Length: 273
Image (cartoon, rainbow, N blue to C red; front, side):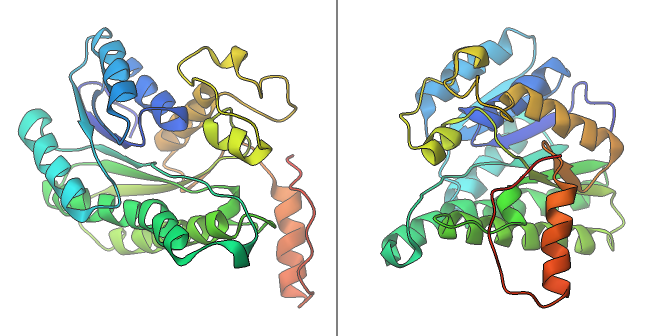
């Protein structure tokens, strides 16, 4: 897909971070945008910004972990804005801690948002994308954690590895359909978002301020959400499955070689190329 004007994008987790940057980029490309998030105040502010760019906007408070909430959102999108061309299953949360300290309820919350949120997005929108016969694209937000495990990140890693598996299976299954639907997995490295703040153990900032004011702005390796969104659109245009905001081929090759040789797992911080 390389012509975005007047097409419709759906973005979950759109109120802040990568989702917000993607929504802004969609509007800059001339796309109408359907926004979903549980933070309706931030979402409404973003919607006003997007409308100022001359595009149609639907902003809806949506719980991605709820099948009913997502199905109702999909119906509203169809009724108000028409068929979906570009779907971003982006909503997600992070919790850090030792694996054995996470409660059952905490696991349920993480899995319901980070994994079932993606599944609910697929179930709500993909059947109509297939039947429409249009050239569409789906981007599911994973993480470097979709490929590499890290201590203290068990819940997030489990979720993002699941998203990788779901996304690869989706790509294989859609390849057998008559409709042309491309699929991508976004695996961002360090991006200036509230999740980055959580990893660093610092209080989150208002993500609607300029990224240069973000407290991670002076940290090596960090990019802005807008830079991440630019990587996403380059990949969509090129019909790429893997979207890496921070290439780490050397590090990942070492990990893969260790698996193939049967070596026991070791951990070192991810080094980006």
